[in-house]
Amino acid sequence: MASRLPADCLKEILEYLEKDKFSLHSCLLVNRLWCKISVRILWRNIWTINLVGYEHRLKVEKSILNMLIICLPNKSKKYLRQKGILNSSQISRTSLFDYASFCKVLSVHGIVRMIADVFKSQRYLEEEIMKMFMKKIPLKKLYYYTNNSNTINLSFLHYPKAKDCLKKLSKLSCNSNVKFSFFHKLSQISFNIQSLTIEFKKSISSDLNDLISSQNNLKCLSLRLKHDITDMKTDIIPSLTNHSNTLIKLKLEYYQNGPLSFITNFINLQELVLTFRNRDYFHELSDKLQNVILPQLQILKFLCAYPESDVIIKFLENNGKNLKEFYISCENSDDSINLAIAKFCQNLQLLSILFGKIETLNLILKNCQQLESIGTRHDNDLLKEKDLLESLAKYSPKNFYRLKLFYNSSSKLTPEDLEEFFINWKNRVPQRPFSFIFRGCKNSLEAKEGNMEVIEKYKKLGIIHKFLKL
Image (cartoon, rainbow, N blue to C red; front, side, top):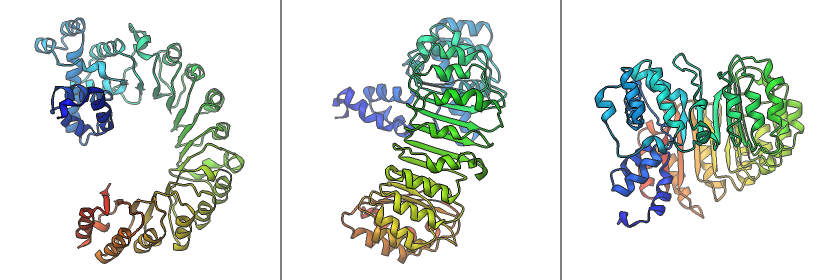
């Protein structure tokens, strides 16, 4: 029956499994059509495999590298044989598919690492594989980092057909100090990079400005600053602000104090994610943050340090109406921020924050009627688990279905507490299956005797959609 599905219909279905490598591997074994479609999706991005342990990583990388070697043109294979890198059996092998042609994503440092792990050091092989990729169909994403001793700067932009390969590039992730005039050359080839991630090292290539300025429709920008760079504000920021009308996503990860005031130029931002290791880094931004209006902003995240409470409250007053997701990594519960959320952010769908008072949680649940998910932490000085579940069962809006709980101390929930909660959840109208996702200490709720029996009972009844420990 599966073979009768039209190929385009089957492809659309299997596309949903793009990030589920395990299921895609199973699809390879169904029949020829399934295999033909699945293998293209699997090889689209071979750098996203989650590998646990050095031996497992080495085994998978060796398998991928061997397949790339098989795909090399005969001319390259003979050349590598002459250099003593490949043997006669390696150059004679053929494959069912041209796997390299399916790749839409290229990681330069990934290739170098694979070769270093398997062959130790073979620059000739690196060059031939890069030449092969440059001759294949246009790439969508390029990752080019030079942050370890194995990485060799390859002048692959000068290889035959590199221009055709990279002209449709839409995503670039790289260091700021890539050499060989990489940025200048790429700025003459790729004009439609929509997502740019830059990890700033101790130096900045003089050509980086050329690349930033040459883009026509930059939408997503991510900056990682691990060193104090004085040239960043004068050399890079002006080029970035030229994209203030098109940029909709901005992520800043600062391990050092860096420029911030330029954020307020991006008035069309839909997503703002700030990861700062020190609250003092917000000093430059605080005044502007209280007064800026970002009418399109839907996602706001403070993943580490966050500004003073009065700054956040004023920002939410100006911009909270359209927020759909708000995350703040608090050290302690701040009731003033929670009250501001209840007052100004009534269209929230996802919220992650600490709760110290049951009254404030109830107010958020009553006021934020679009809320679907809450993430919070369980600690001895915060809201009790039982009180949290009782409020969710009684006051959460009709679309609510998910609780993410980080355990910083042992769970106090009993089987009776869980039974009471799921009975109340079962009786809600409309009834939506509940998802309970948690992580943290070993004495979280699943460790207590009898709790898992209750969980399994309500999973079978369809009351629990997902119960997952991260």
